[in-house]
Image (cartoon, rainbow, N blue to C red):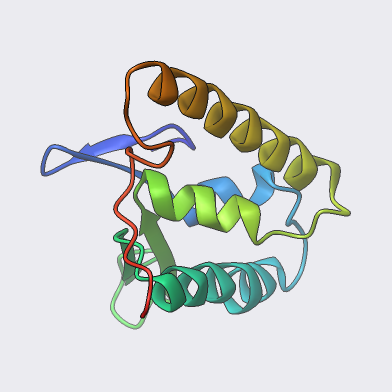
Length: 130
C-alpha cells in the first residue's frame, strides 16, 4: 500500500509507516521517534478529550521467514491521521504544511457547517470531560 488510504473492512486507513517519511521523519531512529513521540502524543490528545478515532497497532514479519524481524505499524483513521499531523514537529516543513492543510480544511468545514445550521465540529465526535 502507499501513503494513500487502503480499504480494510470498508474502513479507510492510513499507514503511519507510509505517512512518516511524508512528514519529514526519516533516517535512523525515525520510527522510534515518530511512534514514541508523535503517535503517542496524538493518542493521548484523543484520550484526554474523548475523541473517537482509531489507532490500530499492527505487527507483522518483515521478511516472512521463520525468525524474521517484526515490523510495527499503526493504521490510522482520518481523525487519528489528523491528530498525528497536529502533534508532529512544526519545525519540519512537511509537518507545517500538513498542519496548515488541516487548518484550512477545518475552516472550510466550519464555514459550510455554520451555513447549514450545524456545529463547526459536526464531522467528529468529541466528548468533553465534565
